Image (spheres, rainbow, N blue to C red):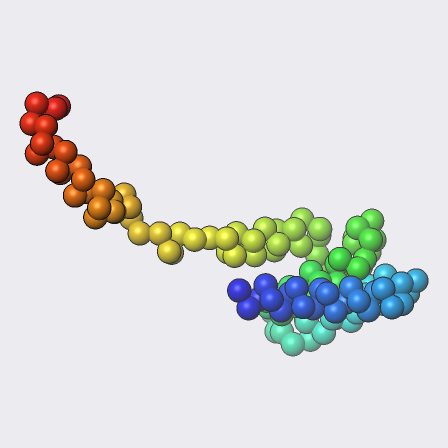
Length: 125
C-alpha cells in the first residue's frame, strides 16, 4: 500500500517536471536512469540486486523515456520492468490472506427461517 503511494507520488512529481521542461525531459530522465544504474553496483559486492527503491525509481523514470529508447537507457530489459510491475500489481490485489477457508457462514436470520420452514413442512425433501 505504502509502496503504491510512494510510486504514484514519485511518478506524478516526475511527470510534472516533464511538463515543465518538456523538450529536455526525455534526455534528463535518461541521464538520471543511467546515473542511478551506475550508483547501484557501487553499493554492492556481488551481483547487482535492485532494492524496491531502485525498482521504484527506474519504473517511475521509465514513463518519461519513449519506449523505443529503453534498450539504450536501461541495462534491464523492458520485460524485466513489466515483470516488476506485474508482481507489484499481483501483490497489491492479492486478497488471499483475507479469505477464510470454506464456505461463508449463513446469516442467522436465514438459518432460523430455513429451520422453521423445515419444522412446519415435515413432508418436504
